[in-house]
View 1 (cartoon, rainbow, N blue to C red):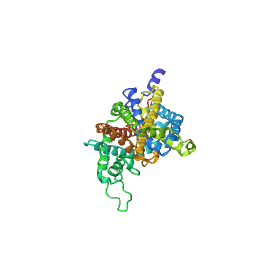
View 2: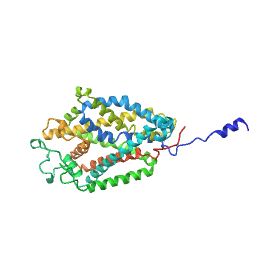
View 3: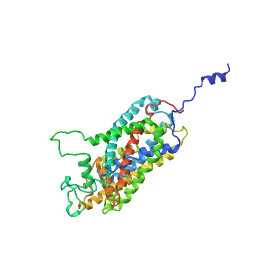
View 4: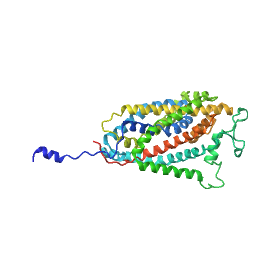
Length: 387
């Protein structure tokens, strides 16, 4: 037996990934859909709201360029080079196996609130099919806490969108003296539907994810641009946008603001969740991903700024209507801020606001569903090396 024959017998057949993206655009749009989603549309506005508006934008952009983009590149390169899921990708450095397990645990934790947000948006989506939007006017059951847009008698009152979210969706109560009561059956039903949708998407695997990414990578921008055009034309919106971009320079010395900026970058880009490693493992081994990363991170920051302009434009309008000069105290800050500002903007449309309310809610639900689907992609523990 010649040495050549021995060499051929000793060679192992190259192992191919079980699945790959249909083309490079599927990978690009999937990453855009993953990164440009709830982290920008939902979380960025209220994090900026809590950290001084314009003060937060500067640390956020710096953290995005200095930390976010390099780490994003690192995770994409790691997944593409190894061709494996997040756990098996770290076999090259057993000492870092705990990092992979930590990312899986972070994903498991994030799925709980992703699904809850999806349930809330489904609830809004179902409510938007009525003859009128239920948050477009004050209802008698809300008493005198609701303002009707007249600044002369609106001091200290709340907008219909805020009252609808807090009282009709969340069923908030001032205290629990009378007990916790039963779960809200409407939200429970929406949560069950959310999990059924998630399960269906996961069963379909990456094939359906890649095709859905074309829609989910473009549709959010269509909705955002429509809302932006409406928000900036409202009375007082410019004051809110100025508040958003005007920094309070002393707050730049606050380490908590910088911490919030770094946290937001990690959340919005979906880095250190293991998802990007898994997504990149479906790439062709020789694909040049640098241009993709520049496009993704740029669109991520732009969508965050657009979402911030919409939210703070609405806050400026609410401040004008309630006669409150302090934009930062118009509504209660928190995770529900986006569920107040966006519906408020939609309700301001004069003609058929339902035509935009349903797509907005569906867009939020789709982003949440796609985020969960990508977090639990079919190869989280994959073991198919590409090289």
